[in-house]
Image 1: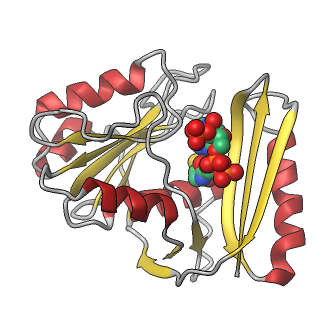
Image 2 (image 1 turned 90 degrees about the horizontal axis):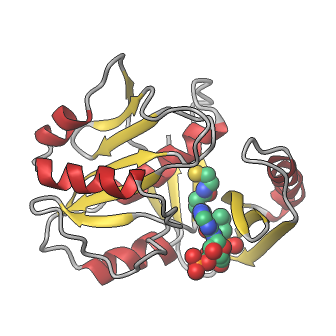
Image 3 (image 1 turned 180 degrees about the horizontal axis):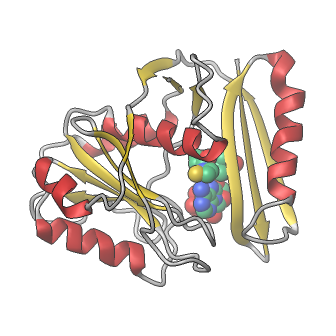
Length: 227
Ligand code: COA
């Protein structure tokens, strides 16, 4: 198996990214698909594109995808409450998401106190080295939802994680989600206004988590999410 990663910039600003793991014979078609994604992205034109293709040498961990739920007027606070995530942590999370800083990855907060536990400052922690397999060929899953579902499944697979809140920084994509192992992947419509790159991802954890081990899993372990 090979890992394929694409990222595209404009003026050194991140415009789009994508990644998967595939067989040798699928590399060419995947690169073509990602070229299209990079050049025709709603976030704008690009002046730089980077492809990384690597043979996978570590064993791949298989994870079962979270289940997707969607209902009108879903409420972040009531979902968080059911997962024992305190208001103070939600307030902190929303501050990070609404701030002017666009973090390049997720922020990790203590679900009880809202204290930030990762030390990555403006970078954030990125879930990477993963792939998504739509085993049932379910048509409700477009590429964007597949990516988000894969990332949410990896994040919430750890027993010390209480949940995750995500708002896309794509310009006009206003559907966010709250995910947890307990409640699955809950889509939240109109989570932000259109025409803004504001967004972010926050992971709520129990303070007892071995954070270095968790980050190593999110960043480096090859993960296959099966739906
Ligand atoms: N958002 C913003 N900036 C990003 C980024 C992202 N998702 N991914 C990479 N960058 C930028 C950062 O400046 C990064 O430097 P840093 O590590 O100091 O933050 C730099 O590119 C190099 O990153 P690197 O991790 O070496 O890139 P890569 O080529 O190995 O992987 C991606 C690129 C985009 C595939 C990967 O980072 C990623 O985000 N994968 C998962 C998320 C995904 O697929 N998102 C798409 C839509 S949800």
